[in-house]
Length: 371
Image (cartoon, rainbow, N blue to C red; front, side, top):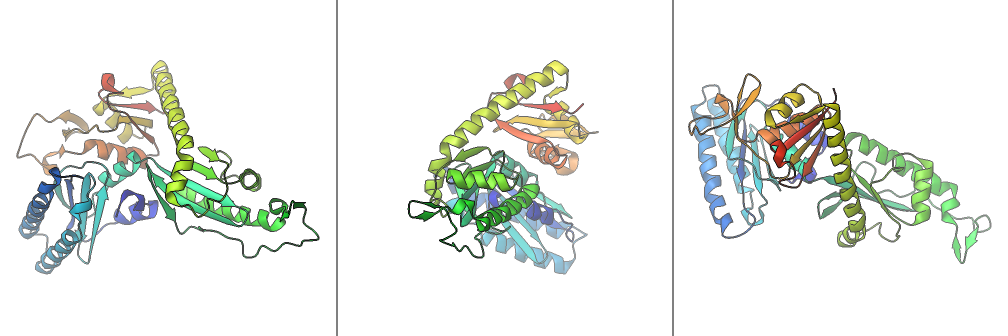
């Protein structure tokens, strides 16, 4: 599975308590040769480490150890390293296993707990800047899930949508040329109200920037009959795209996405300037971590590829100066930025990724505080 599969429901299910030990394996991977030649060896070594720790754990019963070995082997067998991204996450517990490939580097770790480790998935999802594309017409609406230059048709949550019936009374309809004026028909309005309701319900659980695609009349009527699409991130007034294809949709929305990204950079910069003047500004990993854990962060801005290994002691972070024997149990966090991003999102903060070196003077990470 990939980050586009990480819905709110999926994340909630992943965080559900499992029978101990639930095993999480994470490791960096490589997209291209020759670097990816090492990935298979690293994965087998990581599997051996996980199996060793399972066998040495006194809380794991003999039957659980047997089942965990089986599930881990199945997970490893399901990995296709020929099509790797930047990170790999494997989950296994008695009776189940999952494999996730991420467009974000993750540390090499084995964690045994009563839940799966989800911080890497959440951070990768946030960094991918997911968005929705709604392609709407008088008689059809499709929803597309995007992340970067990847776009996939979304099926579910009421999409794709079509009216149960759309019949035209030729004597009653106004005509434009030889075509009925569909956008004034009550059946069309009813259909678009249904689309608006489905969109509103989805955005309530998975809010992302929304790009609208459709003829001007269809877009205008959708915004007239409901509120979910009244303030889109961008609009493309072009019809005939309800069924894509993905390549054409990506090409058509590219200018709108570029304009939105530029506007977002300006918005974030203004928010940071205002926070500095109001002294509601935190900078540096330890300050931002403390603000996030306390629920005081309204926005967190972090550089794209910022990662740091630290030791967590009494709620504060200190750079790790090198202790090859230290691990998770000793307070060492190899992926503290991912943990911070996950905690920020859990507390309702906005997380924004900025280009590398954009926050160099602030130790790569800053926050706008609520108070």
